[in-house]
Structure formats: structure tokens, C-alpha cells
Amino acid sequence: MLPVYIRNNFIIAAAGAPDVFEALLAHASDPAVLDRRPDPERFTIREVIAHLADWEGVFQRRVKSMLSEETPELEMGDQTQMAIDHDYAHSDPARELVRFRAARAELVEIFRGVSADAWERAGIHRNWGRLTVEGALEMIGAHDGYHAAQIAQWLKA
Image (cartoon, rainbow, N blue to C red; front, side, top):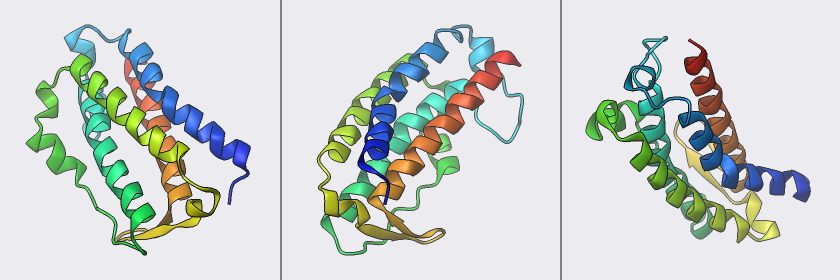
């Protein structure tokens, strides 16, 4: 289990992620930049923001189920299908950022309310196995960092 101050740093980082993505988007107002795809296997900047907004719901449902159920099976989520179903390629990044910000605020409040003993509550993910509430917080930090780095790289491309 992480020291409390490290866990709190993860929560602070999670709370600040919408500001990071807003700052990055300030450099990507041109549709040509938003829709550039230097790597055909990865999302464009426009698609990343919609993806982030959608995945907040997945993260919330996973964490809530771990906190309320005994070793639940965790939602898988299909990012490719979500991108198709929600038409990420034609999404409005400003609107998606607002959606991400609101959902992230809810998720951060959930994390702030986790009791000391509940951080080790866990669920089972079909592909990864056992995941704790604390592990979910770490995963969210990694997910945010990955996409922030991706957008920074796309802005340089």
C-alpha cells in the first residue's frame, strides 16, 4: 500500500488533469492540429479528449463496484467501440473537456472519501486479474500521463 502522502499526490494529480488537458488544448485550436494522426494506431487530439471523457464513467463504475461489492467482476470497456459509437472523430473538444472535468470532479470526490482500509478493496478484471481501489487510482494517473504525453508529442509533430 502506498504511503498516504503519495496517494494524496495521486488524487491531487487526478484533480488537476482537466487543467493540464485544457492547457494542452490551448495549443490545438486549429482543426488540422486536432485531427493530425502521426500514428495511425492512436487517437488524434480531438479523439483523445472524447476518450478521456468517456473513460471517466468506466473508471467511476469500477471504483464504485469495488467499494460496494465483494470482489466484483470489473467492467472491461472497449475503447475502439466507444470511439465508433460516440463518433470521436467529429466530437467537440471543448464540450468533451467540460464533460471530462465534471466527471473527474465526481471521481476525485469518490477517492477523497475512501477510508484507510478500503484502498485495498479489489475487483477482478478479466484481462489483468486483481485490481485494488488504490491500483485504480494509479492506473488513472498512468492513463492521464500517457495521453498528456501523446498530445504533447502530437503538438510537436
